[in-house]
Length: 280
Ligand SMILES: C[S@@+](CC[C@H](N)C(=O)[O-])C[C@H]1O[C@@H](n2cnc3c(N)ncnc32)[C@H](O)[C@@H]1O
Image (cartoon, rainbow, N blue to C red; front, side, top):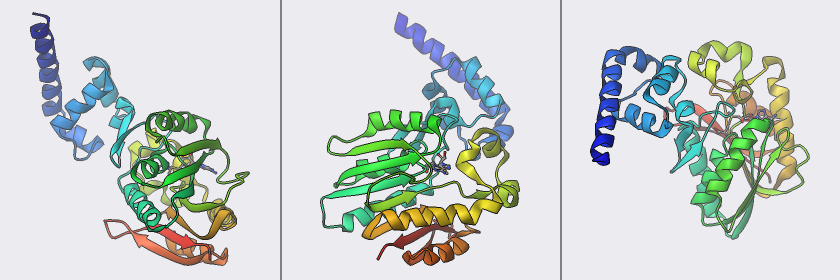
């Protein structure tokens, strides 16, 4: 009997969700491009909210990942809050490149840094998908982002690896030499690029994760590249995600900071998206 009651309840809720989806589909698709009913239902279940609370948040156009508190990235669900960027699918390419670099190394143990770790999605994906033993330092300037990253770390760390989350500016004060440094730093110029960013991103995602001041942009990356050069082991690799319009300038800066074999790589939309460099 209780089972029948429960499924009846679920069916009623699903009816309400389906009716809402059908009625507001056009608006929903503007807020959540590509949204289908089954994913909408999945988000409702993941959110563990009442249907009224769930739809209230949907009406406020809050990203579904922030409503559910979860985002899927490279084989795993990551806990997210509005203190961290919602992981993007193009960043999965950076994870793949990091993994293939690690696979090419002959040593069994490697030291990795992740600058601007956010939810910890990059470093924890790398740790979980490589057969190397990893010691990693993941930094972020945001205390609240690190709270989220540490929770993800507690769920996703592997027994033979260690990820330490540190609050600092890029790699300042980090006293290690790395085989690999990865980063998806803030890379949107606040004045020049902001108008090209989706309103929902500006409204809901942390600005510290997105923007750098135009006037400080080049100095910020010059400092990052200097830290990377000083903290990479000889032969070590640096991999960074960046803005399609600014990577050529950053390539120049990286070369000026004595990084070697600096290369721009494209994403699956054929847009400049990543910078790869080595320490000789
Ligand atoms: C674009 S988000 C990337 C988050 C995550 N790694 C990802 O790929 O989704 C950039 C991250 O860098 C952090 N950040 C911003 N300025 C920083 C700085 N000076 N030093 C370290 N982290 C910084 C932000 O708080 C944010 O978490």
